[in-house]
Length: 234
Image (cartoon, rainbow, N blue to C red; front, side, top):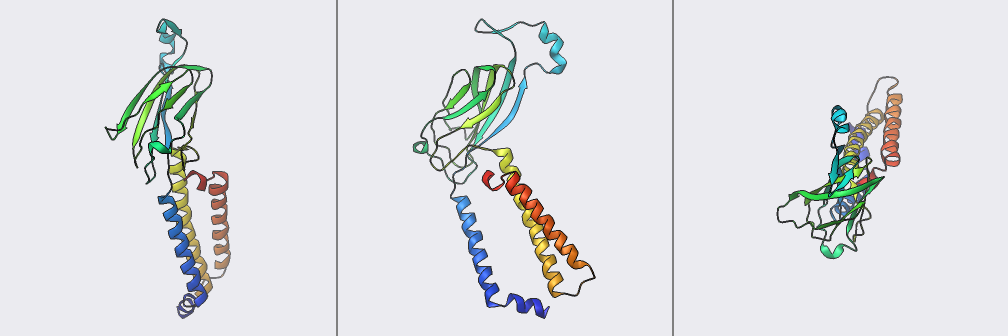
């Protein structure tokens, strides 16, 4: 116990502790001062599911007197998940939600607006929805339900907003936060095991367990940060 107390009382360790604390506060403040806009594909499906295929073959569907081959619907949620408001003046152009594929948009409607006084104005062409600039305060949310004719669509949101490089997938944001939490917990356990091995009497072979723990932490960090681009998705 005296050894570990002496270790943490070293001036150089105290200096490292201060640097790490300041760095952690700086990263936190940076996240608080960062504008964030995300999207989530809530569902994307054919109007007729597999059980209804037989009856679908017997139906004739048209929209404004034009025949429909494959009627589909998709719902896309847009959310300001940061702590800063996104002002109307921050927009360089409208938010574009493009549906990639062999399809044609027939109809769209704005749903699930939070708060109720949030004004959302949209326009559409054959394959895109354009959301006009508006004030989006923190946690403001709305969904756009799109009905289209064609194949299953690939959703590609795009924006030109001051301080925002891209609209991020909220599912990836959630996954990134979960991975960071898991790595933080595992790192704390690894550091504790390392100090326990360095300053206390342990059973033979404990050092190899510590080494394996640290190597596993490095592997998890690599997979989460470099493979899934975890930090970029926050």
